[in-house]
Amino acid sequence: MKDTTVVRPRREPKATRRFVCLGFCGGGAGSYTKWADAMPPGVELAAVCYPGREGRFVEDFAEDWTGLVDDALDAVLSAADIPYVLFGHSMGGWVAFDVTARIEERSGPAPAALVVSSANAPSRGLTPADMFPSQQDSDERLTAWMEEFGLMPEHVLGDPDLREMAVDLMRADIRVRDSFRHRDGAAVSTSLQVLTGACDDVIDPDAREQWRTLARGAFRHTELPGGHFYTPDVWNALPSHITSLHERTPTA
Image 1: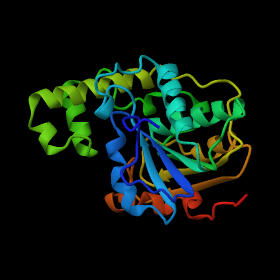
Image 2 (image 1 turned 60 degrees about the vertical axis):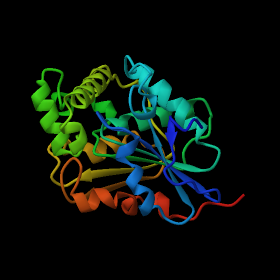
Image 3 (image 1 turned 90 degrees about the vertical axis):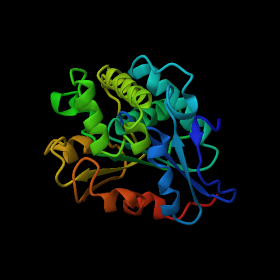
């Protein structure tokens, strides 16, 4: 694992399970690092950093969906030396699903469980409801959206150069997201848990059943209070709602 690609805020040498998190549109590994305090005993948090941000700032952004998924796949496999749970929020949920499906297709080390948060089923395709923010949004609107969802810290908001860099990152992710196409037949045998917010207008009313058709194995849907990022209290303690993090790791 490269420290700049797979960020482990608190290393656990005796960990028996790893919680690997994939970022949402405009986000980075830093969006998840505070969850280190919420990990159950024996679980190590690992957040994947996409190219073009944080410790990988000097690298070019992914050009399209395939490029992002290929990069994320390599990162996840590098963290698969112990059993792991793969998590993705919003756009990251589709990345996590695609990565898991590709690993299974190659008979690789699949996650013990896949957890998708605040995402419609990818088989539904990319719709206008999923395309927020959009490529047509002004810099000011993107900045306001990022500030609303905690993606624009005060030190960034107050620095014109950093603010411009954050908006450029968001636009790069939007372009990648908008290039998404679901691969026909893609599904997962890995245990799947889907988390959605009770007040999230982005989520299709039929999302539960749409996701169920993509799960060949165990399936669970959990509805939580709040919108796309739930409530602050729920978001800060989101790992506590992930069933697979609290199950005993099977022994050989």
